[in-house]
Amino acid sequence: MQATAALYRIRSGVARVQRPTGMVLVEPAEGRSVRVSTAAYDLVPLLVEGASFESLARRLQERHPRAADVDAKLRRFLGQLDEAGLIGTAEPARARSALQPWVAFDADPLARRLAAPLLRLPAAVGWALLALLGAAAVAAVAVLVARGGLPHPMALFTQFSVLGLLLFIGVVVPLHEAAHALACRLAGVAVGDAGLMLHGGVMPGPYVNTSRMYHVARRTPRFWVAAAGPVVDALGAGAAAAWLLADPGNAAAQTLLLLCAVFVILDTNPLAPSDGSRMVEALLGDELARRSALTRERARLSHFKTVAWYRIACSLHLQASAALLVAWWLLVPQQGAL
Image 1 (cartoon, rainbow, N blue to C red):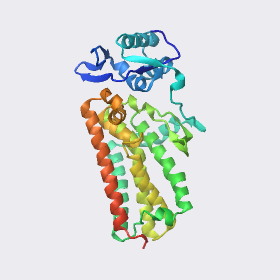
Image 2: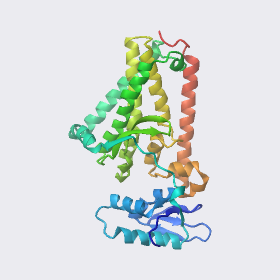
Image 3: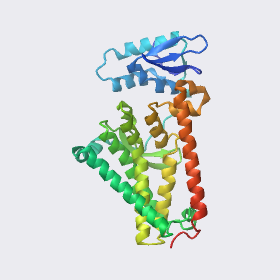
Image 4: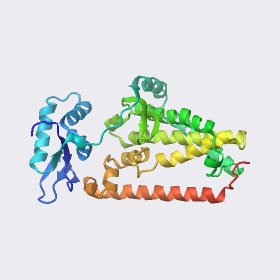
């Protein structure tokens, strides 16, 4: 098969089977199969979405910079898949267009400098500092609840504060993205570009590219790269709670706390392609878990146990979020503040 401008895509119904010798892609109708090498394993997520020869070769070169004859090896692999009837092609025009950032810069030098002092600390000290910050945030929220100072969810609308919104956008959101970059560097992986872009086609905001985290073999560091952002959201809620304890009824603090709480729920949601989905995928060791669990057509690309666990995670998140919001709505007085 020659390299062309077309996109290569794994056909519908192809199953991904884990065997002691590695992963095998299987065509279910006639059972034709192709064993996927360790190097080619990194190409499967791209082939699920549809990728050009150039993007596949670039992925191989990034993951295996010392490999020789990348193009020839890739042509051989694609040829095997094509001969087995496991892939098809599509025109590039059908591919989903990527959103272009408004401003972009190389974030790795800054992330490296921020990570340097933390890397010099013993790991136990770093975890202890994070645990201390988390405990302080939880304590602030708990004391606020005990004193009856927790704002009602409707306060986000009835007592909305522009200052609280600006603090969230100008402080918490950038720190959220910076935490992803820092965690990436602490895991030993370079950070990509960062800047400003339109999220979801409607919401402007900062972003940081941590796609190289999949270079990390261990699951735990990959989990923390994704979880670092929601941790910042939770710490922001704790800081806002402490502000409310010092200044009861402050509208800006209420808005900041409620926005942080809302984004903790949204950012940990595994149903959407978000930090939450990447957290669960990291724990399951399968970056196709969300696609497999939520789309019947692709369910065969992940092990059935992975699909089951991912769906359980989605269900637990929905139930916990619903229970929290209902309790918050019913048990906290409408006036909320002291």
